[in-house]
Length: 303
Image (tube, rainbow, N blue to C red; front, side, top):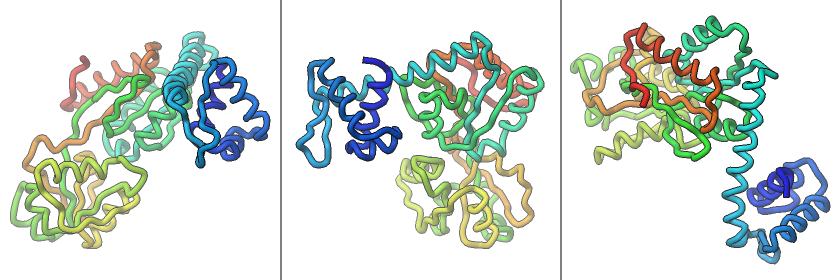
């Protein structure tokens, strides 16, 4: 049994169809079927119920699938870390969710490039969940997102908790009568949430803020991304709850109001592979804390 067998098995287990799995792997179906059969013979157990439609994993197959994913993630992690430790390549790939660009991420990237000019840094916009998958596959080395998600192969550090604020069209009654708003004040408004897909996302954090307080927004409008949500707010289509860093955009057709609950926050989370303790990763984390101190920003101390 080798890594190729594991990759082939995972593809079939996820597609539950040999034809789709072979297309995903870019190989013909007969060789794929033979590889899976060899794997089952080597293990001495049946991994798939072949008579089932669609194809199903056996109990042993489900067990093997969970551990195969971990082994493949660890192999990708080992390969990526070894390359950096051996300085075969001085590259780092960073994944980020779009909303982090309105906060400190641009300064973090600029500072890292200044302090480490020998490292080629590449940036890739992707959802938090896509970052988790990319870390395990070895296609990125660091991710900056907002969704809390536990995975044994990924180390997650909550850097800071960013307050949520309300974006309203200029002249909206709520922007004129109260200096600070509550979620209850917003129940009569159309709530514009983002991103529409994929989920879970920041949109679910906003909805959870209402549900956790036994509140239900009156009307919900889903926007594809933050800039569209703000454009809809400016047009008077509704209001939106956004991270406080968005206030830095300084739009003259939108006003921002604070929320009265200090627990209404969205985390900024840095994700890396669990075993990745290379100097580049630890150096970036140390640099981020230094930068937060210089900017006099509240942050969660390392623990």
